[in-house]
Amino acid sequence: MTVRLRARPMLLALPLFLAGCSSMPSMPHMSWSGLNPLNWFGSSLTVTDQGVGGITASTPLTETAIKDGLNGNYSLRSGMSMSDGKMLSFFQAMDGKDVKLSVSGEPKGNVQRVDVMDPEVASEWGVKIGTSFSDLYTKAFDSCVKGEGDDAQNVECKAPQSARVTYVFSGIWHGPESLMPSDDALKDWKVSKIVWRANPLQTGQAQ
Image (cartoon, rainbow, N blue to C red; front, side, top):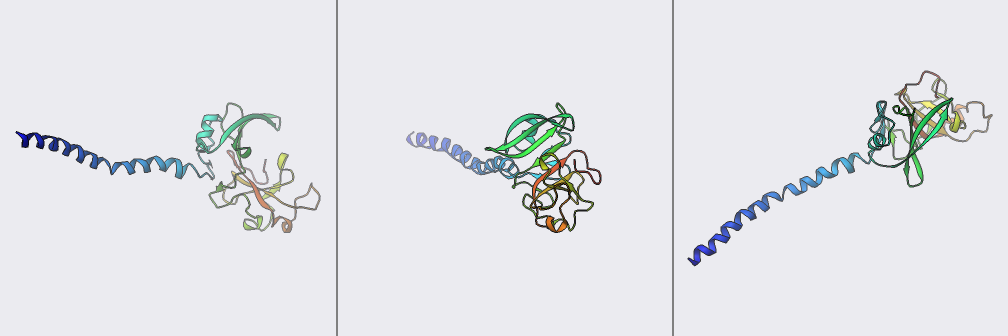
C-alpha cells in the first residue's frame, strides 16, 4: 500500500512536468512575434512614389488614419490654413516640440501632401535631409523652380524617379531673391525637406 501511494503522486506529476517543458519553446516565439511589427517596421518610414510610410492618396485626412500611417511614431496636432484661396486642414507630426512631418489636404478629404523634415526619414532612392544638390543634379534647368510661401528662399526640384516627390534645397545665395541661384551656387545646397504629393507635378511646376 505504501509503495502505491508514493507512486501515484509521481505519476501525476510527470505529465505536468512534461507539459511545462513542452510549453517552454513557445515562449520565445511569442516574444519575437510581438516585437517584429512594432520595433522593426514601426521605427522606419520611407518616402516612395506611392506615399510616406502607410500614407497614400487614399488615406483619409483624419487623426486615426494618419497616426496609423505613420506607425504611431509621432504625436499629432491639427490646424487649418489657407493656400491659393483654399482652406486646408493639416496635421503636424511632433517629436517633442519639433515638427517632423506635416500632412495636409482639403477638410474631410484625403491626404494631398506630406512634407518631411525628419532626418530619419529617407526616400526609397536614398535621399534624406542633408543630401547635397550635386549628389542628384548637375543643373537646375528643367528640374527645379524657386520655392514659394514658406520656401520662397529655397529651391524645389523634382525627384528624377517620381513626379510626386520633390526635394526642397536650402543654402546661401548672394544674388537677387527673384532669380534662381546659379548651378555653381546650388551644388552645395542641401535637402531641407522632402515633399510628396498625391497629384503628380506637371513639368516646370512645383506648387
